[in-house]
Length: 619
Image (cartoon, rainbow, N blue to C red):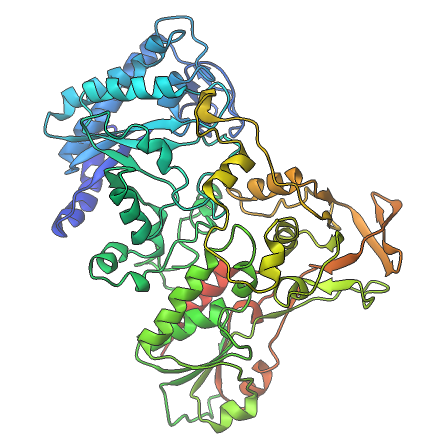
């Protein structure tokens, strides 16, 4: 928003929001040293660990011009129909870089003392208010907890908040953690509402409202925050990707129908950082509402097949892909029968939900269970079907979503009693010894390692009910070194990670970094967690044999024996698609989706999307 030429494009957005009776503010952000181009600028020429480029130090002339740019953007946003703006002064972006001594090493009037370091945000705030008008909403997002060394002290945060209020802000929002901080702040492993305490420290001290943010994903949690005085307003982002009807459902007492954000980041942030359009793992419609024109999912139909019932559909397998297909097709009015060989819906999610830090997957299964009930899906649990059954019962179409089975690698001694599969560990609760080698370091290998090194894994193994985010906030703060007393700059202190009862080796064949294919925004946290729990992560491993002595391997070509009590195989999967060929041969229209279509690394995002895309086929 730098010229009037851009105003008209924004008016399409603001007009749509106002037509529905809503208000909308535009966020104004300058990335500073986080920019991803060689001409980036910052208060001081200090390279950020998350950018490949070193910034240029800003001249005083450029600083003054940038202040004018913020104000100009605010004034133009008003012309575009916005009701206000939010000035992004947190998360380690440019304004935040001026405020913190970590990134502001200037010796002039824009650096040094705290009063000098906050000149930049205060001048921006005053100039924005002057240019945009007194009746314009101006939200200022303050970094209330930097979570980096040499960040702000609490006294500085509070002093800045008073000054921003005096400069004309309408509302103050809470920013948590710089992007370079080595503390997860928005991932699934972060407890719900883990940072509301820092907003509460300011409550009652200002005359303007305060907003609480981060890992607030249900109406119940939001209401609790408001009711108990942690904030005046609650902010959400990803939950509206997961369910755009979140507010309507909450208001109409239908919260049990909300498709809850599980904070996985796989389809939103991870895709953005790969240069792709954001979407949502649990809601593949997100950001593609008007653009999905995909061809039908892999399907075959005999020209000789004459179906007498065009609306009776069988879904075989109630994993993520099957659940998505069943509920979508039923919502379209099809008669849908969902067959599942086990006693519960969920497929691979029934393992994922048991991983400490991934309990939010319970929410996705809760949602699908509700949609099965609401949309009239006929659910057949403990029911294994074959092609003859489906043909005899005159299903006009069949969706094969039977998932995967673990792949058994060709290793001498792989049937030794000490060898277990990841299903044995995560699903069947088989006992595991105190020393364990994991064959395979993909997503499942990491999940098993997290499970086996967590102090609650035994209770989960015994199939006791899991609680969403079993980690208490104090436990999370201790493990990651978050200083709730705020005695240290940036609110960061020495971490006290959990000391595991098991010694675990996480092994992979390939040469690359162990876990390099994990999600960009969450993989680093999983690696740090396992490293703090003393998990040995080795690459370039060749598996020789398993015997009574343990697992015989070579590491970088050198022979080694791991004297372990158990070896857990996490070496990939193979598709289960036995139904597919005979149905095609019989002339039944068949769709193949999810793990049954492609085993590869388990991909819930792809599975749920393929289930949804069934509805875009030629029905």
